[in-house]
Length: 225
Image (cartoon, rainbow, N blue to C red):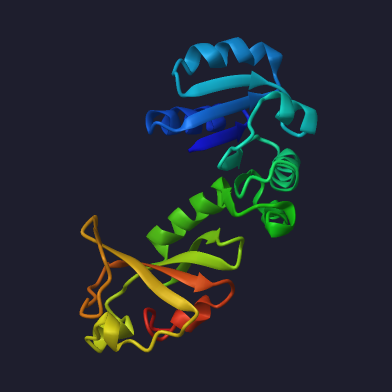
């Protein structure tokens, strides 16, 4: 895939390095002129092209020759810039997949389809969720929004009092509402593909896709309250 990354800071550079190693075609756009040479030295790969420009300006995007790109990643350290980049990618460039970095979790609500964002990634929120995962066994922990914010990925780490364990139910025996679907189970650090005959154990990490705002429907199934 051809992937455009706006922002050559530590986050953008790390993403470019990883994706280039996966044989994707990367265009990294950075507006700091003094950083361009360093980035080109650091990202010495035939799969990476570093361009100088302000990704918030249409003329810079056009000059970067990114026509036909499959994905835009707005990875700058400024939320306002990431919103503008996302909006331009969708409305002016016709890029159909836009991923945006959220630096301040207070701004998360802005990152939606109105700004062209398909997936928002908030490092502060992700860290909080990871902390919650350790301290809130038996609770539903939101991980990230997907499908333009209409769905969310959540995780439940099962306690011994989880109804699915107490009642010894398999996945096929659970009355799970249509707004939720189990997509994976992690047990003993190994992923399991959910099947109707799959049973549940204490400490299982259950990953579900749930309609935004509806994860309360999981209470009484995977949690005891």
